Length: 531
Image (cartoon, rainbow, N blue to C red; front, side, top):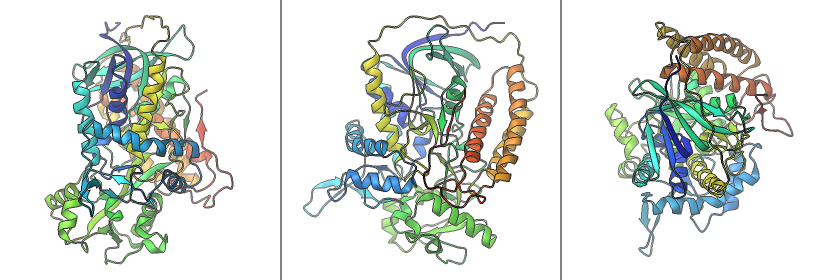
């Protein structure tokens, strides 16, 4: 039967409710009607779990050029310098906009008694330029934006909705006219008709067995854009955060890079520091180097984890600057003022994504992508700490300006077909989804993880091809479910990661292949086209 789908209309559909999606909604909503789709509750995206902060030049001894220089170094030869400069230049005004909406960045008094923002330093940064709200910056950003969008009459929030697929126009070439969405509460497919669409779905780290990301990070936007005809780039560059708390009850809890910025040492089980063997910057080396060093030492020693030790700092300093981490560790019996923290690397951030320009515009005329889902060229082969939330807000503002200028363009209504469920039934084999899910994440971790080889990548691709066939057969036969949708997207993203990794015949940044340990002289982004 044809599902008599509920239909909604808006000027702008935003898929995703983190820093990027909510900033775009808030920035543009005075001019149009906006629907924001949240896959879970509004507070459950990756933004909430970002601890460290947001990079912006506020200190007189710092400069935009220095911020750009540090970003380029971290990106290991693959950043787009124009994009890096654009982002760094927009950082301060974007942070001032966030502050105007109530963002509570930490402040302190200087010598003459005046308040100024406390700036910390993280790996890869040559200056203190990280604005933060203690060690829970992402949570403060999410709360600030959520409170603001809830007050705006033109922003309509749809919680517990998954986007299934973008709907392309049959009369206007290269144009999106809406999306099919899955109402998780009612377990029905609905239709949203929109003049413009923005993907702000975050990353795809759930494709790996171990990740610091929340459950919603399943690459939905990347997979939908790919199916709609957008190019993707640099999917091989998956950032593994070096320091995820290693504890059976921790469940993906991140230990912020800011600890190392404030002097924490990485040590082995015997208490010996080891980072100096891998990089002259020691613990302040970029994340790819630190993650590989921890991985190397764990394998060399046969250890389950390494340790991060900040106990040499005063206890009141630790508790004041890292209250969230202190409290979390205490609940697990670890006193970080006296004991080292057990840590392991975990999949954390996707540096690649949907190809966009400086306005966040994709290959499709009225489709935008912002935040971690996008490839802007900012991060290159490795994201520098605290540039991620910055990218979300800077490109949300850029997209808002571009869409606002286009709202006066003439448009024509186009009918959208109802969702067709005439050939599907309710599944009685959900165990297949769970089995495929675990298989995918395990071989991606084993074969496409921190260290890769051609043989491992080929093995992964063969398994992906088999899984894709099974998943598509399942998708065609049974009614929609949340796990089914996420698995369908994750296997697409896994294939894109592996194909990009196979194309890069060198080791650079986050991509390390034992068969190609050297770097090429003139590196280029890895771009895949669906056509």
